[in-house]
Length: 268
Image (cartoon, rainbow, N blue to C red; front, side, top):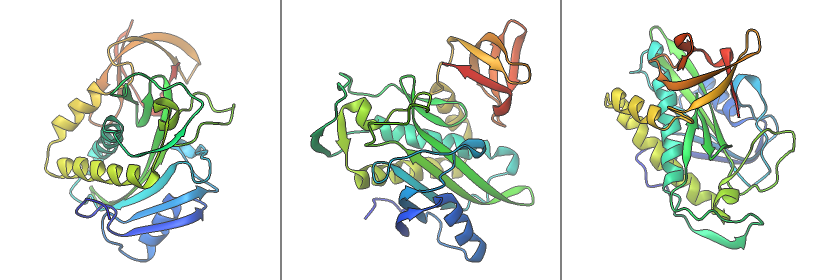
């Protein structure tokens, strides 16, 4: 049983689903499940990431799940705050990675650190060093000027140590820490962190969430290379933060510019 008030109290677990987000959305379309309902699958045959990309995950090795929330107090124009809160929850979970581990070691050499250099690659990918360990896909339904419901999809690489060579820069908790983790324990800790951040947002602490999110951004304050997707031109810039709507603020030779997700790419 999870140590939470509502997230994970209703827990739908499956061996396989096409997509946990799709299953949760279908459930919402025909009923109103309790807030915090979790849909988790050991395997997804059609998992999705941002903008229709596929989420690749080895069967039974990682966490692929969706959480149903009702942030009907959050304005539609402020919906990126939910994304920031979820990203921080994932970061919190990794920073507290003191879990029971299996005796089996991976072939990877363990890092000799006690606190993971865990950052959020804008808008909401979780990075360990320069490699991606998790992704978030949030599907919001609106009612007027407010959100009505949200399906928060999370894919976290936990125990997978071999990845498709076509993937650009994947990693996992097991590769990073050099140990295998108990998936249920990681999930329980994730639910606790997610509930805490969600309630922080609901309590109106938006400025604190935005400040922590910006402090956690991958390559914040560092000179980095980017590509403008409209003409594939490469340029240097320094990430300054984000706008309330979630646009990335970058200081370039032209001054400060802001970008939507599809307008800019990192060169890593």
